[in-house]
Length: 439
Image (cartoon, rainbow, N blue to C red; front, side):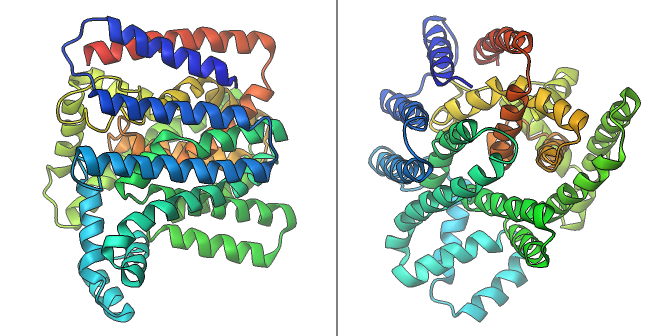
C-alpha cells in the first residue's frame, strides 16, 4: 500500500485520457479544480498518517474533511446555484422531508413518516428533522455537512481498532487515512446524502461484533444488536447482513479449507445472486411496482454506460466484486458530479487484487476477519443482483472493510505475489483507459 504509487498511477491515467481524442465531455475547469483538490487532500492526509499519532491523524481527518466538504458546498452554491449540487434527486427528497417535518412534534413526525414511507430511510430523515427543527432548515442544511465530518472522524477511531486486530498499526493508520480522506465521502457530505452516517453506524456495529467475539460479554452482544438494528432505519437489508457476518465466524470454523469447500461456497454465491434477483423483483412487486420495474432498472444502468447483451451481465458481475472503473470523462447528464470522486473509485479498484487474495487467505487461515469478508461479499451479491455495480454509492458501505481485507492480503503475500499485483495494476490502468474512451 504505497501512497506515491497510487498518486502517480492516478495522475498518469488522468494525463493519458487528456491527450487521447474522445467523444465524451471533459468536466469544466472549475470541476477539475475541485477534483484536483480532493485528490491532493487524500494524498496529503495519507502522507501525514505515517508522521503523526492516531489522535493527531483523526484530528487532521476531521479538519480536512470539514474544510473540503464545505468548499464543495460553496462550489455548488456559486456555480450551480444549489447547495445540494447539480443532480441531487435523493438529496432533494431528504431536504424537502426535513423542511416539511421541521414544524412537526416528534411523535407527529414519526407517525406520519412511518405511515407514508415505512421504516426505510427513517434514520437519516430523523437526523435531518432534528437538525432542521433545532437550527432551522437554512442553517441546518449546512450544519449537516459538519456533522458528516464528525461522523467520519468518529468512525476512523473504531475502524482503527477493528483493523489492528488483523493488520499492523502502521497499516491501520494508512487504512483510516484513506477512509477519512475519500473524495466520495466529502462529495456525499456536500450533496446531503446519508452514506457517511450509515457507514459509520455499520463500523460501530462491527466493532461491537468483534468485542463480543473477543470477550463474550452480553453487553457487547446487546450493543451489537441495537446498533445493527439502527442501521435498518437507513437501509433495511443491513441488519440481516450484520447478523450473517457474526454467524459466518462460527460457520467458517466448521469448514475445512479444501478445494471442494471453496467450490461449494462459490456455487452458493452464484445461487445467491440468481435468487437475489428474483427476491428483489418480488419485493418491488409487493411494494406496488410493476413486473417490469426490476428489468427497467437494470436496463437503465446498462444504458447509461452504453452496454447491452451478455457483455453487460459479465461486466456487472466483475465490477460487483472488484469495483467499478473511475470516470474521468462522461456524458452531459453525469459530467457535473461523477468525475469529482473518481480517485476513491480508482483506489478501491487498484486494491482489488489484494482484496481478493485477502478473502482467499481469510478462508485458508480461518481468521475472524471472515466476518468482514461476509459483509463485503453479501454487499457485492446484492449489488450484482440489482445491477448496481457501476454505482460506487452502493459499494461505499463496504469500503472500510475492503481496505482492511486488502491490507490483510498484502501483509500475508509473498514478494512474488506483490509483483503480480503490480502487473494486475498495469492491466487495470489499460481497463480504465479503454472504459473511459469506449463506454
